[in-house]
Image 1: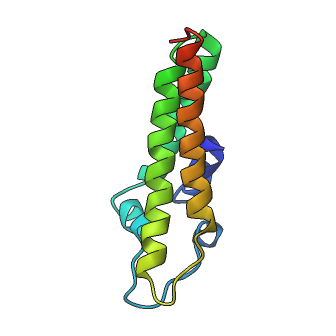
Image 2: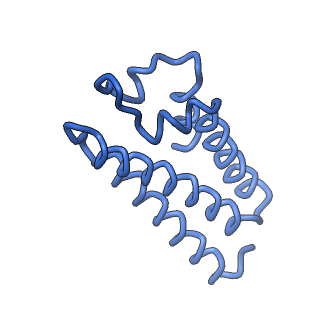
Length: 118
């Protein structure tokens, strides 16, 4: 999932795949962060790589899942904050789902830690 979102946010992909157009004068937090550079692609690819490397090496699970959690919660929170600030309000289901995925990564990290994985 992390890699797929990273691909969807590549500058070469159509913008309609990741957002609906906002009314003039409105800016979403997700689009603002993206305007700095291809940060969403970088952070999602980075966490996808960290998760794959942890799986292949058999260690680093806790750190990889904490990083993935941070990115997912940042992304979900950006969507939810933007949903509240736009007029008319936009749907919050994707932001809620992304935030849940972040919480899920924390649960996996705790499970890895409790099983003695590092």
